[in-house]
Length: 326
Ligand code: ES4
Ligand code: ZN
Image 1: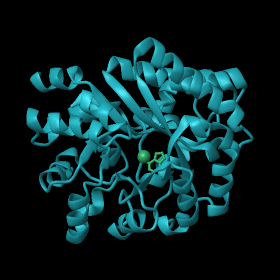
Image 2: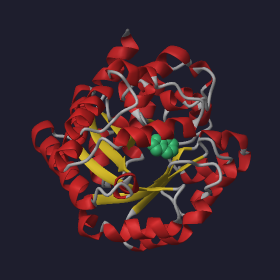
Image 3: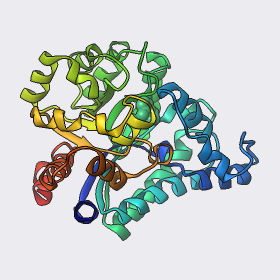
């Protein structure tokens, strides 16, 4: 269709992507074989069939189990390189990519294993594919703030490779207020700040992310719609929301794609972007997320163009580089 061609052709930015969530079943299988890791699946198709979730937690349980096959530097290189090749296929020219250090350090896999793997793939993509990448170090919010502080400190040799810090994992019961000190430390170190908020959690968590953590963007934020004052604030300050349509559907944040509120958020004047979140688990990369919207909500070509432009505007690229894409 016309919209499909438009989506494919437009140069795009991805702002909400968990690299561990881009682990495809085939690579998971191959790495399990390589390292003699036992998976509770009989074959690659059985892995795919297991991807049916009731909520965020039921997904996270599988996501952390899947990540256990990532053991050596080359595994992390392959994971990042596969994703960046996908970016190239889909005309994604800039990606701000989250990684969860604690998912690896808690299993005895250190920064000196995963960071060199990531960095080598990122440099290769920059040189061979012309893709720019920023890394976002994301804390697991179901763990303690002390663990987050230690995680930030252990990253010190790699600070020059990290643009921002973020907050992900189980939202309900783990409000942003739990991480006020570590976000203040990260801000003092010069990092940009993002946090998942208002995916499953209430608008109050979005207020906390804004006022206590002082984030530059909200990841998801779809529950903003429940709080008119919050909507006014997000509009006034043009705080970006990194919305992930297929994620919201797969995690039952919405029952049907046609019920997604993204057009409402955009028409109310918010800076909304479209993103893939965990593409291997949720059934699509960036273009598939745009296509799902084109098919199921009443999107015009002009809406798609605005959403794509918002991706660059909401990025952490220098202002003059952004202008090149707008
Ligand atoms: C995540 Cl969709 C989502 N929400 C919270 N934490 C996550 N980690 C990976 N994907
Ligand atoms: Zn996410």
